[in-house]
Length: 408
Image (cartoon, rainbow, N blue to C red; front, side, top):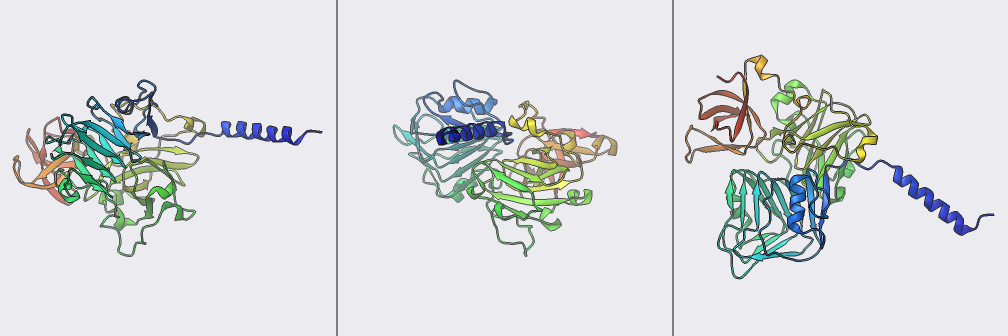
């Protein structure tokens, strides 16, 4: 007869083997911890390059870098060129006043629960330099500084209990070139009778399955929207199956899975009106799943998603950084411009929409990176385009846009 101790050991061994054989969840982000074996600079390098620097965790697409203690930095940090959430966990980064706190180039940075403090006196130069990117400051403080941010074609927001060099949140928001991102409230075009905001846990059985990196109680919110809530006529004309607004603390990394197959269109909440940007989506176990890192409207439309078998979900697929922002051909419902005789302009930077083709104070709106617009006319220097209900001029430089179709 087996003893109780042997029986307990056998059960524990069985459970360990069972859990080891379960497929790991599909993720599009990693948690990189800063410690004695992984400095903050090395962690940023791992996130930027989707690789592993020193003994840091390997970065992948949207990464959270977590501090475990206060840091005293002697050198400036690497430029941020990817999507990073820097979670300070209440700790402080101290750096010399001659150094810029963060330089963001073509990247997205969220600073959360962090204190950045300059030593050696107040810093009078730019505290942060950001070019063609986005910055969100949440429950964080920048102390011993008097300078503004150096901003070019970028979006930004200050949320929660934050303080930036003694400036108000409204003043900091005015330094950026476009509307604040990400918004916390539901979109203005949502129907008046829409239900009050609620967490994704309260969705009914016919709704998508939603998971968040830090759990659904971390501030992720969901609600189903109809045609009025979608607001994009091109999507409505092509037909849609279901649509949900995902808002709140989405930048942590959220996965939404519709309980049927199709393709996904995503409208970014960072702009008004919302613009279409590419997101990673795939088919798995009869569902269509989308990986999200920003608030917006997720729309299931007729089509086919790339297949991912359950057994392959243990490891996120490798993505060529040069192609990571480009949507596969199957992820768009836009007709082939070359066959329709149409000229399409796709922005590869955040651009100002101007009333006249001239660099001056004639800005009438903003077009985010990744938007595809109909070109009405123009010349070698400027494109006259339609952005939802607005028409205006955007810079035609190859640095900012690419064209497709018939663009004489």
